[in-house]
Image (cartoon, rainbow, N blue to C red; front, side, top):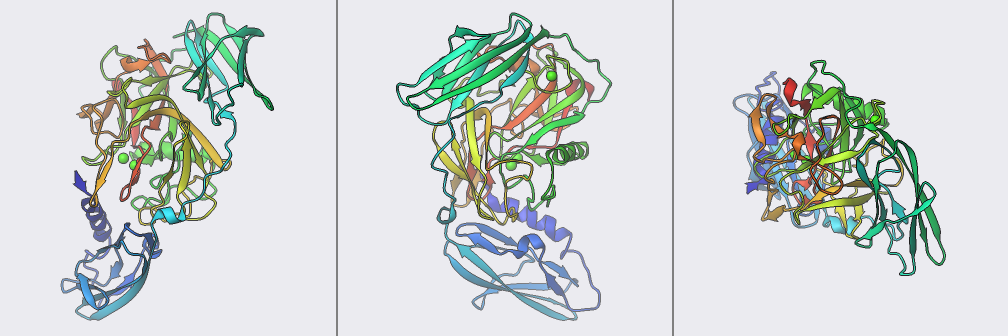
Length: 494
Ligand SMILES: [Ca+2]
Ligand SMILES: [Ca+2]
Ligand SMILES: [Ca+2]
């Protein structure tokens, strides 16, 4: 277990090292200013606000005095304020140097716990949603076509399938997932239609499955470039580390397009800077300029995250071959099994919908396929952005489809602990977090690929990789659990 304050302290030191710890003696009394991120002193009860002013004119005689109601609360260059009471608090800072002193007072407004300001969930949900409605798949493989029901169906509801015009049989899982197992025996496009009929509604959905050449037809040779060379999709779920996180600052402008966001992620990777996938289900899809060979049991992929001893945020890895050879990730995905795969701590076929907050500086509500609801918290200290909903996410709600790992985080007396799983996840301090050829990071084996039935599948190589935040959860001081990535590469070229 690790205390939050060690991280906060580290942050304070990082901030301090670029400002008031350096001797900036300019023959004048000190000047106190506040970085914009710290200027909005509005927090929730129980939330820690780290106050780190920028001080000009420090020297070896400089002293600091933080006071509240006339009492000294700190003599450090920074002050971490925490109140479980609501109200307005006035904090005074006095800084001296050999030429004089400066004082400043700030007002911190502490609101009731977040629950008092949580947005309401929409009462009515749409009928259903689909991870995909068109896909490419290699001949002789099989895939499960799925529809996720978002409303409880009346008992008389009738579900029917047709495949290429002929009646076919699917099944309903747990009352909320409709599934059709499709085997790709004949090349060409197959039309699968799902119809749902109740006393007052008929809904249909078409799925187009393009059965392509047999697997391994479009293998590409290596150019020697280890790192992924393109980001095809960057769709982070809402989260406080995605854009505007206090350590990183703004990563994207308010009118950022999806294409610009993808380019920005690749630029981050080339510098080994972090990008966050946001809360559960948030993901990115990357590709290589060659096919990455499956070594048959050794490591094949390298992915860097930022796990700490007290904070693993496991991301689940998916891989794909370019089954139709068009250079785009529009083909079947396979999950790389980690240590929890197939256990009660691992759920496949999970869907979670986030709702765009109507109010500024607000938590983001979600509802999942199991009917559970919750919020991605708004943490003004960590990220004072108006919204954690990214500009390129269209609409008022967005559903992510993924597998899910059980949230095992704990929070006790100001301490958070988000423990790692054993292996098989990025941003996770497991046994595969090693100092390998690409540096200290998680390493992955393509031999762990699983098909839709949970069985091992032999992929001679892969072309695309998808990484998704695996847990739904948050702690009061560290916020949402969200996977971070800094770099993805082909192990064999490191
Ligand atoms: Ca992390
Ligand atoms: Ca493709
Ligand atoms: Ca995170």
